[in-house]
Image 1 (cartoon, rainbow, N blue to C red):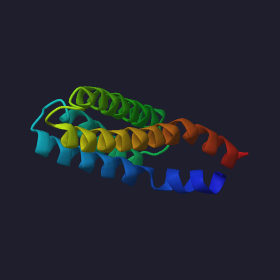
Image 2 (image 1 turned 30 degrees about the vertical axis):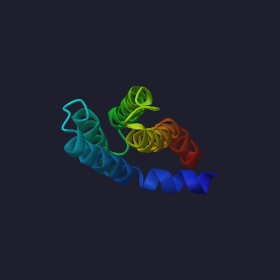
Image 3 (image 1 turned 45 degrees about the horizontal axis):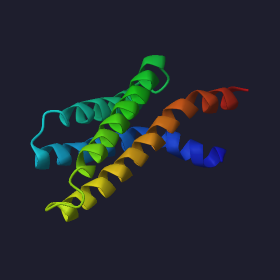
Image 4 (image 1 turned 180 degrees about the vertical axis):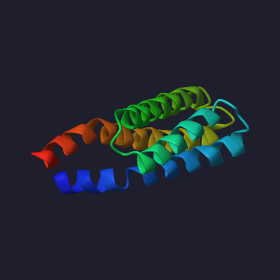
Length: 125
């Protein structure tokens, strides 16, 4: 398990930037300003993790960006669930599946941020 966690920590900045790019594509398709917040937060978290990986503020920002992305993804799953069974059923199903996957990715990023101090403590002893 520590090898997997080390690999996640090593590629954490790129994962945050990749998720930010996915949110950017969603924002471009949806045309919603609400969706631009995770774009800014995730890309900034990835940049900060790349430039200053050891600072406490960096990991606090990354954890909060992951939490915000999870909350927004869960809200969008909830919002699209109202369209199930109607005229937009197939679009609603695809959106629910996509945002559920995005919510799971944000949970992995959240776990990465929470587990980072444990990895640092294990490597310094």
